[in-house]
Length: 445
Image (cartoon, rainbow, N blue to C red; front, side, top):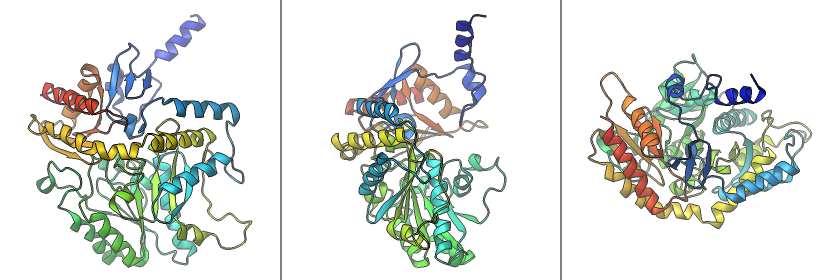
């Protein structure tokens, strides 16, 4: 076999790659391959243009292969490919941290960089535990998540997460974890636009958990302001405010996982601003670089940072970090992405698009097998009826048909389809996304 033939075979051999969150055998029988991307579109190897209805994976908020981000990455790669973040640093890390802190509300002004949403969540949980420890409240070790919550795939994240299949294969996970009830109830919230009226009282279950374990044992509560991966669940009106009040009452830290909601998805830099609730820690990732280079991080309130800044100045305050924290290419991409969001006013644009997304999504009400449609910001979740004995099969086939027949990319999770296009989406493209999705749903019986 010639060298060229070996290279070709390796390039087209699907066996070696174990795909994440994918049914590998089914995929490799009919692979959905992507060759390139630009603005609102992916392109398949045979040249089909596929309208991106999910901003990649909730991350390409400014669209794909935007020239300023590409140029920034190229310049950085030719200037500084890597710099250690332990005991050393580079200028772009400080600039990006300052830019992120300026976008965050109140005194959330200290930024710790990592490489993904999963790492951001585990970082926030560790900061919360360590914070109580350095303050002399080391008994506060219990963590509270929420049913149907998704917080990445680290052991901390899946422990506080509440999606069953993400948890059940991996043993007992972290001990000392409890869960609030999910905020979604179809009977009371079906076909909601924005934040549903019903459900604020569900936050009060935190008082039950406090009564069961005692507040002196609880370190933090972590929730997604809008739960994206489980199907676009907006918080009930008043829910986040009640969580904040209960946490304040009992000295518990409140963590917002804004990996999906950060950087414009709900019309603001962070959902905390939309809802007027200041958490103690914010996790971010995805949109920070518009998906161009992996990056994540945690924003901490000043008081949390200050609690660590005691003792001898030559001693490490927080024994945590990653080889690629504040990677130069990621920082360059992040600065360029924030410039694009500002210059093109994409967060403000998302506010204007929100009612258009809601109107278009609600055209699916009444389509056969559609049980619910929910919208908030530039995002929508569509629940489909399950076939007997085949939960998730209908939505999976709709996703396949949307890609193969309608040239549309959407997300499937269980029996839910999710739509969350880049914030550069046009009004005509919003209508096109839901027209195509409607045809795909009708075609799958």
